[in-house]
Image (cartoon, rainbow, N blue to C red; front, side, top):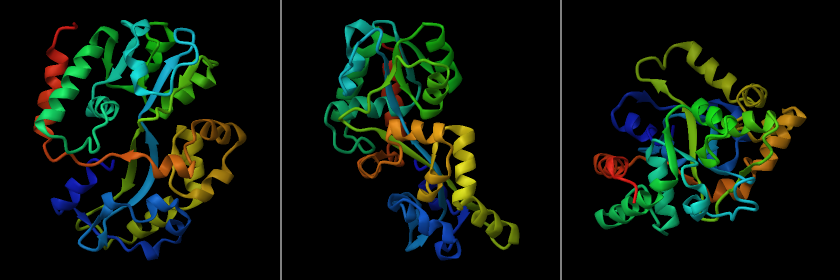
Length: 273
């Protein structure tokens, strides 16, 4: 994902690509044609494929008409009813709520504020999840009433009739991921590499992948090729809405990752207030 592409580029593990060789890229949403997370030294080092967002979702049976804000997670009605991702994205979400401008490069002072805000959330957290299926199972069993999760879980639950699951699309913004195809250094001469990249950038291939996974893909023309149910799902979530894409807080490499993990571990180790 875009949080790690820069690491691979800097480590010299991947080969650059020529976007002009792949006409499908010309059909991409603008944000994915030459994204900064794949650019370095005046070259492009990969091709975006699927993408999505870290969603905040709430059971409307517990909080009717929930506010479109990250602050909803701290609502006392959700005591013991949240499942939050055991990942730095949860830390970023608290930072966005606090109005921190660059959540990927926070100062020690900002990180301490985020830590305290997340410790205040702990009474509401039932579980920190790692695998998406955990979240789906807990919601189906009535163990949780919200949290942060990705589109795959929402697609599964809505398909199963869980219309009480509300996507908040918070005003403070959402974190976004973009998965990319990158070429391992030394393999670029293999003719299969170019053929594969040409194949995966087409609208037809990406539409088939969208139907299979429920997530969105970078080729804008793929949307028109989706079945009606998949189109309706993506429209409801605003997945391909240019406004949503333009204002997404796309994941970036964290320079001080060790410090961020230290803060996150402090949150996990702290007792609930």
